[in-house]
Length: 75
Image 1: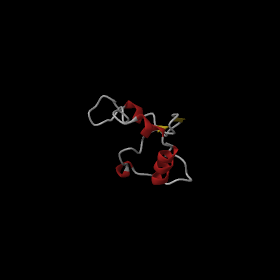
Image 2 (image 1 turned 135 degrees about the vertical axis):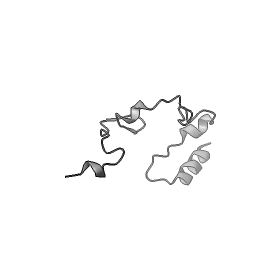
Image 3 (image 1 turned 180 degrees about the vertical axis):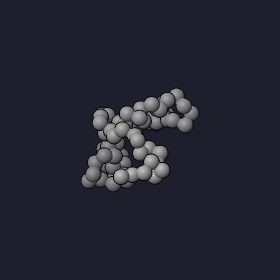
Image 4 (image 1 turned 90 degrees about the vertical axis):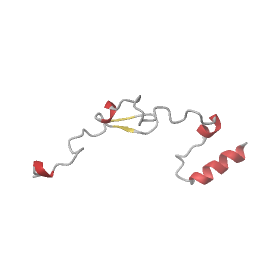
């Protein structure tokens, strides 16, 4: 049995039970983050070229470099 004095921050967080389309696991306690806070990038793709968002970095058969090269070769 764990003594309360051994407890660490986050030990009492609820486990993720849902998954977003992006594949991100959603932990109920983490959804309480305010996306307008300056330390949170609520729009990480803002200002990036549309072509860069078309590269599939989730292909386990390609390295990140190969994924970029493949997309560039497609024209």
